Length: 256
Image (cartoon, rainbow, N blue to C red):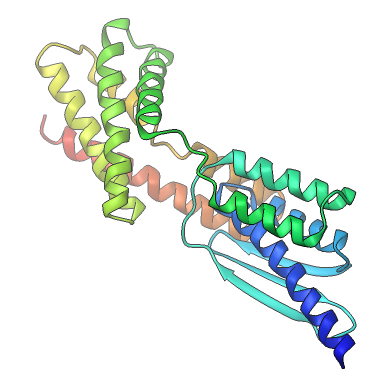
């Protein structure tokens, strides 16, 4: 009986390591099929040869089979962002587990450290990067250098407003709508006072920092990998983001 209890306890600990790795990857922008593959590889390396994982953008189900009855755990994913550094760190831990350089306890401690890390750049750096990217996107879309500074202003302030709004209103759709509205309004005002020239080019360049490029890419990759539910749900999320951006700009253009 004690041996069975010890085995069950070990299995639960292995599942905890696998679920934590999957949670970090999914919350950081990892693809669904990559999360499933990583979890199953970690389980196999730690001694659970038969494991099954089912991952969606909002939850992870993981089960482990052994001599004792099959055990299953579920965790809910409510917040998702883009932090590919954490994905790379989890992949590194997974490789170390597979090669035998990390045992279960060490892996769990390392994953807990990764989960609590704050690897994102300061907000002012993100805003500056979004501002510069907006100006460069405007040039890429055949804009003129006259509109480079206006694009930087509207794009940077639009991204900053998106981050601030999202902290107060955790519904991403409304944050994106309000940010797009501010971008459109600032672009219109800059053109009307003569600081900008081509309104359409300024708006296009500025909203590119809000476009869900990684989300669309992951949706297509999940669909190609056969994860239809995850691919469709990510595609729907990307569509809502695009709709929010378009609606925010459309409200401003009605003022013309």
